[in-house]
Image (cartoon, rainbow, N blue to C red; front, side):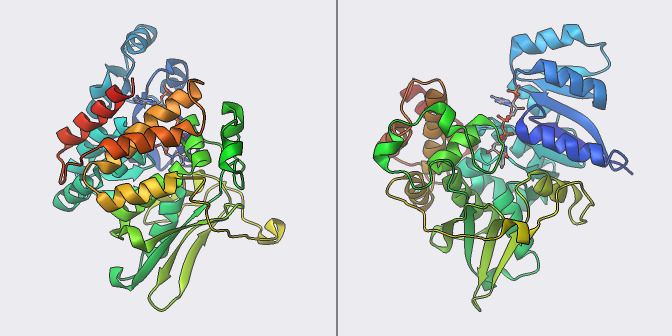
Amino acid sequence: MKKKVVLLGSTGSIGKQVLDVIDWNRDKYEIMGLSANTNIELLRQQIHKYRPEKVAVVDESKGRKLKRLLDGKTEVLIGNEGMEDIIDERADIIFISVVGITALKPVIKSIKLGKRIALANKEAIVTAGGIIKKLQREHNGEIIPVDSEHCAIFQCIRQEKQGNVERLILTASGGPFFGKTTKELMTVSVEEALKHPNWSMGKKITIDSATLMNKGLEIIEASWLFGVPWNKIDVVIHPQSIIHSMVEYIDKSIIAQLGVSDMRLPISFALGYPDRKINRVKRLDLVEVGKLEFFKPDRTTFKALDYAYKALQIGGTMPTVLNAANEVAVDLFLKRKIKFTEIYEIIEGQMKRHVPVFNPSIEDIINIDRQIRNNLL
Ligand SMILES: NC(=O)c1ccc[n+]([C@@H]2O[C@H](COP(=O)([O-])OP(=O)(O)OC[C@H]3O[C@@H](n4cnc5c(N)ncnc54)[C@H](OP(=O)(O)O)[C@@H]3O)[C@@H](O)[C@H]2O)c1
């Protein structure tokens, strides 16, 4: 029987690649629901091709416009709640590939339904990891990480006892500014920051890769997903992006997962798990790659790593502040309203002012997220 998939963020970089993988396996998966924020042109093409029962459009005027353009066979749900409403009990897999904290409520709903979540979004687990993991245990939900580093760790850790894990080693490409000084970073342009050396991704995560905040968010994400504390998670710069991450065990063995830089590999894994599906991803040719290099990250220049370690160590709502300040700062940088290095200043300023709430509820998290955004308006 075909697996039923609800795909949130179908018009994004990850969403489109999920549909590529589904195209390779049309006999195995069917699309029940899709979502977009504003890109109704692409969503309309996807509706035509996959014929989902329901779609959600977050932007209200775009949602109304799409309704007028369709033949009535696909129901269009509008606004933020629409993304929750298309998460259907009959679905087998909820694929969450929207960007930002907007994924939080859909993740909570999916986990409460005890569904398998293929989780590409990182901001939800960064801000509400404790709540999500608790609900996962209570409702027997399943989270299969799609972020390539976490998918790698998930694969390296599968048969092992938790107590045997000594540390997680996240690899980072270093982004477009690897080796630059703070002075040089002060004058980098939006175009330069958007030129990632190895991966083609959405704008927000591409800027996060340039500041190393992407790795910072991944440290917090890894801690929640794998139950490993902050001081057992290391980052190593690996410019070739061939080793997607590693796990060191108490006997000093290190297990790594390797592959080409193509997100369709972790997407295929998350859709097929526990099976592995034949796919059309390029085979890794290590001879062609030639060398694999490793460097220590420059945490003085790329301060995002230290902010993330600190937020994780403090806990409570501090990761929410880190994430919200970063989302706003990246948006301001993309709109050319601030310099690249001001992203760090904004995050540090908001974290310094924040008095964390411990064991926060979802409402606490949403309120603090809103408060940080208001502070920065
Ligand atoms: N791209 C990658 O290779 C990659 C790798 C690992 C993890 N991730 C994570 O996956 C997530 C998605 O990344 P991406 O690169 O695919 O982002 P993206 O290309 O910017 O796509 C984002 C998707 O979310 C939708 N969206 C944007 N703002 C929204 C809002 N306020 N409410 C609801 N939907 C909204 C977009 O709709 P519109 O198209 O209509 O704007 C689009 O469908 C992020 O959390 C990222 O960190 C991405």
